[in-house]
Amino acid sequence: MNTLFKDVFGVFKFAEGLYAGIRKVLVPPKAYSWQTFIYLSIFSWVLSYCATGYIKDIIAFFGWLFLIAGTSWYTTEDPLRVPGTFMPVGAVITGFLVSVFAFGNQQDVITSRTIVFWPTISALITAIPEFIEGNDTDAKARIPKPEDRQRIIILVASSMLLSCWIQFFFVMDNWFQQYPSLQADTFKRSAFVVRTEERAKIPQNGVVILEKIQPRVVEEIAQRPWSEVEKWLLDAKQRVRTLGKEVIQKNLGRYEERELWHVEPRVANTKSGYILDLLSIWIGPSSNPRGYYLKKSCRIEPVAATNNSGNKITVAEIECDRINKLIAGSPPPQQ
Image 1 (spheres, one colour):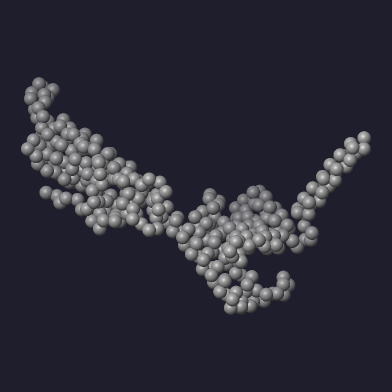
Image 2: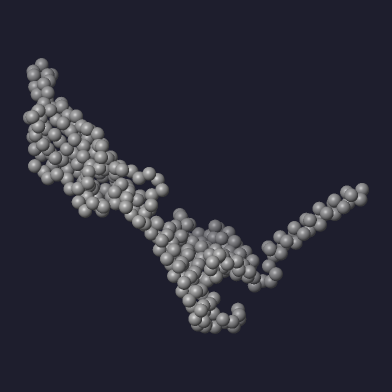
């Protein structure tokens, strides 16, 4: 029986200690405390969900201010420093909240600008107290000591450099998304860009252009009377360019690099017919000053056929090769 009472008493004692610990954290010791700001921020956000229009935005704005103030206050009471610096971890947390508040939006709370400005804002938050002396009720501006100025400059400059490198990452990532063909050639000897995945040896958008334009050309040539095909080849430059623009707009419409590709034909006579080279030419940045292009060669030859009336006629037969490599340099001149 005594053991039972001891167990029950121990459970109550544990619950009482747990309650006291939670109460100490949640209940402010006085009205002017960091908990009060946190509760005000939560209260403001709850109200903002019930409001509409500009009132909702105003309430949410003050909710962010209360959250930033409360978090900053709590994390600076007993600051934990970032290893190797005098920057408090609280400044990093507060800097993140300030960056989200300043550069986030309702659709995407964390944006690229949020991440880019985060280190710099955190450094500035760390440096601001160094220019203020006194207490909460009597504070005034001051100029830091020379040794303090040096470490402030180093911290802020290092954070700005980190922000620049983060921005560089986002810029390069955006380039690779909008100009994927740059990966195949332009950055292969870069000292700054390192690809963690296997790099494509042939720009895929250039391949897509030729693969999509081939059936269009075949459709206009195959099984057509030989005289009509020869006329088509005489006007091949204009016809292929028109088809190329349509293909590029349809298949590369979501890429900014669509303006850096264009299609040209090259026609050459052979003993048995013609060779039509379809060229997908890159006019954007390249490690080769003369650029590069991809080529798909099509052989066009006359063959005998019978029309619906049973008469013998000569029609065109076309056969195209596969794309096998990237050709560096300017395309051959038109004949």
